[in-house]
Length: 77
View 1 (cartoon, rainbow, N blue to C red):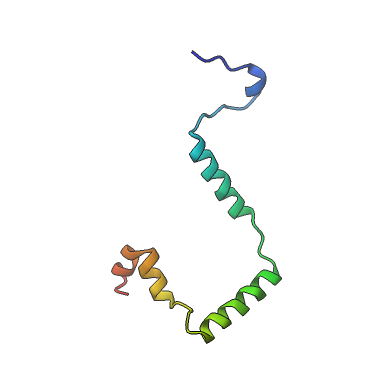
View 2: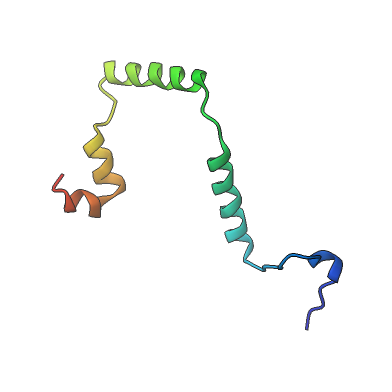
């Protein structure tokens, strides 16, 4: 049996989840709160142009096939 002090709960509910799930939640929250700046977009654009010039920029349909094979199959990519 485990006793949880009332001052930890206060007026809110207490939820117990595995640490890995909690850490995954924190990472997701970090991604959602990240802000994209104009400098980020400019840097990405330069990187994409460089990759395209070098022939290393993957095509969108190839990315879909790799990351979402079921979706690619559904849309016959």
